[in-house]
Image (tube, rainbow, N blue to C red; front, side):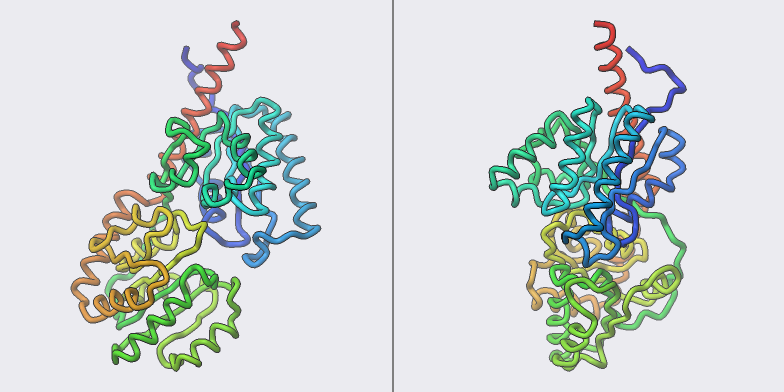
Length: 380
C-alpha cells in the first residue's frame, strides 16, 4: 500500500534550542532552520530546553518544573491539534533530564503516537543497573525507533534496543569559507565549555610538559564557564607557570570564533566526558583543516581516524597528549597533511546538507511506515 503522493508526513519535533549553547541545541537550531527538512516534511517545533545556562543543566529548580509543565502542555496541544504521524524527541539518557524526558515520552505513547528518539548523549548502560531506571528504559524504548550518531554508540543502548530499531545519522555542520593562508605559528586551540571532564586540566598538564621540553607554543582556551570558573582556571595557569603560553579567551562567536580557528595550528580535545557522543567542535576543527588530538570517547573514532587526520590518545593521559602535540608542533608538513585529510572527510561525510538528507530520509520513511500501519488497521 502506498502513501498518497504530495502529502508531507507530519512530525512534531520536541528538541533543544540554544540557549544554552551545546551540541544538541546547535543541531536543533540547524534542524529548525533547514530548508530541506521543512520542505520535505510538515514540521512543528517545541523547545525541550529547561536550562538557560550550561551550569544549570542537571540541576533542579521551580523555574525548571514550571517550564517542564509548559512543555507537556505544548506537546499535548500539538498532538490534538496537529495530529502528527510521528513525534521526534531529543531524549536525555541519564540524570534528572532522563526522568523529565521519560515522563513526556511515556505520556505521548499513551496517546498511541509513534515516537523516534534522537540521542545526542549517552549514559543508558551505566545507569541501567538500578531497577527503576531499568524499568523506565524498557518502557521508553519499547516499540520506538532510535537515531544514534555513531554505530559505536549502540553498545550504550543494546540492552533495550534491537538493531532493527536503530538508524545511524552522524551530525553535520554548515561550511564556512575560511582563510587557509594565515600565519598560524605554534598555536594550540581548545574550544569547549570549561567542564573538567572535557579535558582542559589534562591539557594544562600537557602544556606544562611541553614547557619543560622547551617546545615553543601558545595554547588558547575558548569557552564558557562550566564546573571550572575563570578564576580557578587562571590560578592553575599561574601555578604551573604558563602565563606566557596559555590564554583563556572566554566565549567566542561569529567572526571572533572564526579568526581563532583560522589562526590555530592544532586542535586539542582530550575529553573523557561520560556523555560525549559526537562532538560538533571536532567537525568545526576539520572544517578549518586543523589536525586533531583527541580521545576515543563516544563516537569520536568515527570522526577522527588515528594517524589519518590526527591522533587518538588515552583518556586522562597528559604525557601521551603532550607527545602527540609535540610531534605536530615540530612537524608542520604532517600537521598540514592531517588537516587536509580532515577537511576532505568533513566535506565527504559531515557537511550540513548530508546530515539534512540523512535525517529527512529517516523521518520520512518512519512516518510513512506508521501511516501504512494505520491505514491497514483502519481497514481491518
